[in-house]
Length: 481
Image 1 (spheres, rainbow, N blue to C red):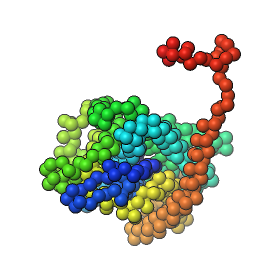
Image 2 (image 1 turned 90 degrees about the horizontal axis):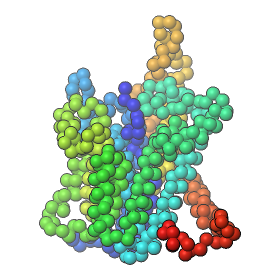
Image 3 (image 1 turned 90 degrees about the vertical axis):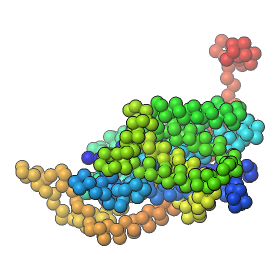
Image 4 (image 1 turned 30 degrees about the vertical axis):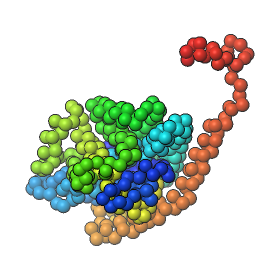
């Protein structure tokens, strides 16, 4: 049985976009003589994030109602349907979108500090780095904790119990069990909130497993730029290449390679790469990178030996990936990096990804990531299965006890399709309301915590233990601290 260990979840990241008036931030296409300076440097990243937001729900929907798409073919016949083949099967390839989000995280979070560092404003770069690192962490933590509390309440009043009985793999496997008592429920809530950031596990909202890699990735950006902010761009780029290679060799193919790849993309974004010769190659190269990236992102998590194309990729993996590497994760990361590089090199693709509709999806991506799971396990389950659950009797085993594998069957494809359309419209409405009403409060809470962190103990006079006096600065220097 396929078990969802996070690889299926195309998790949506809160990427805080930076703004800039620096004309060097725009890549100019010499063929069209048109500057993309009217597009923010991160607009294409927001649009790509918006596409991924759609694939999040699509991935979990397929894992609920179309698990036969997981392998690249039907083992019984060896034949494949359309959405089991390369490119089309990305609808269920959650790992690919996770990798893309991490690349975008490294790219966007590094842009503003790098811009200031290149101008020689080192102090401003360090200040922006510190402030950004503080704010982004809490803009992840507070909404995630709130969603966990809401999902916990739904669980304890029994809303998710129907989901545990339905014939939909992802819905059933991610519907948590109620706690036996109030005291145990409180302990379970605390355990799951902390477990999100300690172990990458949250029984009340399973997709929150990805927040821990995002947290680690943000720390990678912060620590790397903190060490390299005073260096030259060339040295910084080479250092990031070394860190990328180290992550590749030490099996950190999900977080490390993608974060450092995104940071290298941020460095490259300050150069007019399209002006390099020969120009024809740079017209074709971006599209080739994107196509190849999408192809290798299609590599299945399981049963790769069932088809020729996936078997070829599996054989190639033995040569290019380190020993004991998770092949599907490495391919997802490598493909995501190719896609991101290809888009960044193409002004036309950047403009397409900056379409207002995609930017809107990008703006709601993180709330969509947090909200869709609990709503699928509650509203969608009741819309689909409640009429069939009334009067449903499980199959009895030989001893007369109910068969635990007897689930409420999924309705007909037509009814399933109609209800999914209705549910998705409702989901987008809820997400829009969350963005309008909840997100500002989370921002205000983060701002309040930031003010508190800057004022708490500010007037306290710290004294040495030996004497009731301030420790002289000279003594610190003498000790070489």
